[in-house]
Length: 193
Image (cartoon, rainbow, N blue to C red; front, top):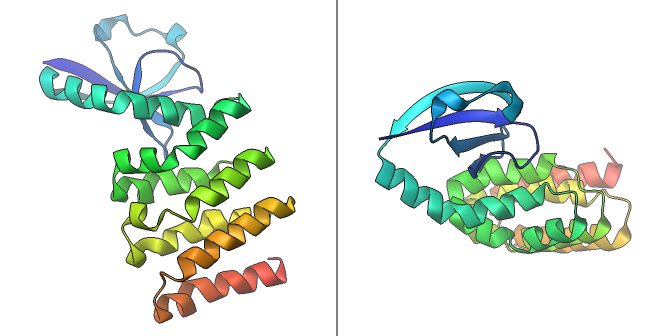
């Protein structure tokens, strides 16, 4: 048996992070000797202890490790690392699966504010191709919030790319969904709300 603790960390690279929960900002760390946890490891809170079979945990952690690196790079201060990770968003989404992409990755991207136009442009471009990654046309509405945010940024190139992506996903909306979700967003954008 191995012990895994679900904890919250400051944005640093302490420990051996294997998985990131975007919505809560938590990281699951494999702690070889749980009694060695101390304040100087920048732990803020320990939420719960889970016991899992070592074989299963190791396999899943190893398969998620490259994804965890890409996810970590989404928050990196280095613009080039962030840009590279944004360009691999589809890989991250595939690894997370459609449910976690909708419930964690998309809200994370909506709430995270990138200030570099190049990163925003790449994000707007990627989101236009995300329909299958969020579960198909019936879930495409979850892409509206981040694209709406991108359609309001100051840089014209980013806005244009966001609008192009919105056009792409609008083709996937049913008439009812267009009326219920897409048109109100267009109205907000037109009125500058």
